[in-house]
Amino acid sequence: MAFVERTLERDLALRRRYRKERFMMGLVALGTGLAFLILFLVLAYALAQGASALNLDFFLKDMRPPGETGGGLRQAIVGTLIVDGLGLLIALPFGLAAGILLAEYPDHPVNPYLRLLSDTLNGMPAILFGLLAFILIVKPMGGFSGLSGAFALGFLMIPILARSTEGVLSLVPKEIREAGLALGLPRWRVILSLVLPTARAGIITGVLLAFARAAGEAAPLLFTAFGSPLLELNPLKPMDTLPLRLFAFAISPYEDWHRQAWAAGLVLFALITLTSLLARWASRRRF
Amino acid sequence: MKQLYTHFGDRIFAWALLLLALGVVVLAVLMAYELYQGGSLALKRFGLLQFALGKEWDPVIQKSFGAWPYILGTILVSLSALFLSFFPALAAAIFAAEYAPRWLAQIINFLLDLMAAVPSVVYGLWGIFVLAPWIRDQVQLPFYMWAAEHAPWLLPLLGVPTGYGLMTAVLILASMIIPFTAALARDAIALVPKEHREAAYALGATRWEVMRMAILPLARGGVIAGAFLALARAVGETMAVTMVIGNSHKLPYTLFGGAATMPSVIANEFTEAVEDLHLSALIAVGFLLFWVSMAVNFAAAYILRRQERLVKGVL
Image (cartoon, rainbow over all chains, first blue to last red; front, side, top):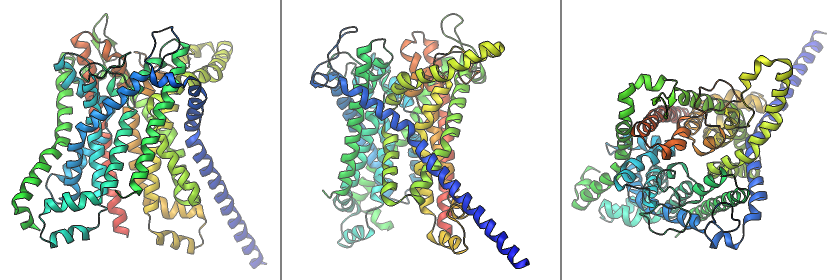
C-alpha cells in the first residue's frame, strides 16, 4: 500500500509541476502579446488616419497657413534630409575614428574611457544634445538655424557610430590583418586598405541606422532647427523637419493639421523603416 | 607588436585617430561644462540644493525656480513605466530566446527593432488623439462620477478629468522602453551555455523550471542592465511625455493629475524663456538631468561588464 501511495504522491507532484509549467507558458505568451499591444495600436491608427491625407500634394507643396486646407509638407521632408544629412557629415569623422581606435588599437590607454563615455552618451537624453547645440551654436550665431540642428543631431550620432563601427571591425577576421602585416604593410595601410573595405557593408549599416535614429528626433531640434513654414535650403536659416512639424500640428487646434500630422507620422515611419531595411540589405551584401 | 607603432606613418595615423576619437571625450566634457555654465546663474542664485528641492516654479510673478516638481515627476513617471514594462519585456525576451519557433522569434525580434525605431512624436500623437481621450472617457469620468456620488472627499485627489496626466504618460512610456529591456534580456538568455539547460533537462526539470533555475540566474545581470538602460530612456524621453503629461507646474500628487518631467519642462518652456534667469534655470534642469542619466547609464554599463565576465567565467 505504501508503494501505491508514494506513486500517487509523485504523480500528483508531477501534475502540479506540469500545471505550473502550462500556467507560466501562458503568462509568457500573454506578456509577449501585451508588450506589442501599444505598438500595434499606434501603427494601426497611423495607417488608418494618415493614409487619407497622403497625396502628391503632400510631397510637392509647402504647408498652408492655419485654417486653410490642402497643401503639403515638402519643406519638412526636404528639411529632414538636409538637417539629418549635415548632422551625419559632422558626426562621421569623429564616430568612425573612435570606432577604429577602439577596435584596432585594443590596448590604447584611452580606450576604457572612450568606451564608457560612448556608452553613456548613447543613453543621454536627446534633448541635452539640443541644449548643447543651442549654447554652442545658436547663441553665438544669434538665431535658430538648420545648421545648429545638424550639430545637435551630429552630437547624437557620434557615440552610435563609434560603437557600431567598433562592433563591425571586431568581426573582421584576425587573419586578414596578419596577412597584411606579413606582407610588410604598415599598420595604417592594413587598416585603411584591408580592414575597412572588408567591413564596409557593416559600417554602412551602422551609418544608416544612426541616420534613421536621428531622423525621428524632435526634442533636440525644438530650439535649434526650430522649424519653418516654407521650403528653406539655406542651413543658416531656421529649417523644418518632419518630427518638428508633426509636433506643431499635433498640438494645434485644426482638424486638417491633425490629419497631416498623422500623414507626417506615416511618412516619417516609412522613411525610418526604409532606411533600416536598406541597412539590413547592406549588411548582407558585399560591396 | 610594439615596434609596429614606431613606423612613421603609423604614428601619424594613430595620432590622427586619437585626435578625432577624443571628440567623444570632448563632447561629454563639453556637455557637463556648458550645462553647468549655462545654468550657473540660477544655480548660484538659489544654490544647488534649494534649486533641486524647491517646490515653486514661477517664471512670471515671483521669479522663483525650484525643480522639485519636475524631478519628482521624472522619478514617478520613469519608475512606474519601468515597473509596468518589465514583465512584458521579460516575457517577450524569454519567448523569443527560448520558446518560440525560429520564424516567430524572428518576427518578435523585428517587432522589437520596429518598436525602438518608431519616433517618439508618433507615440505622442497617438497619445493625444487616442489614448488620452480613451482614458478620459473610459477611466477618469466613470471614476469621477462614482466619487462624486459616494466619496466626494476623493474628488480633489482625482484632479480634472482631461485624459492628460501621469497615467497616460506612463502607459505610453512603458511601451516605448520595452525593446531596451527585451533586447538585452534576450541576448543574455541566448548567451547562457547550452550545457546548463541540458543538465537541468537531464534532471527532469520542466521547461519553466529550466528557465527559472538554470537560465534566469545566469542571465540576471543582462536583464538588470537592460532594465537600467530602459530606465535611462524613460528618464530622458521628451516628446511623447511632453505631449500627454499635461505639463503642470504643481507637485504631482495623483496618478490622474497633470505633471511635468525634467525633459518636458525644457521642451515646453525653452523657446518661451525671455529672461536670462528663466533660461538659466531651464539649462540648470538640463544639468541635473545630465547627472541623473550619467548615473543610470554608468550603473547599466557596470552591471553589463560584470555580467560579461560572469558568463565568460562559466564557459
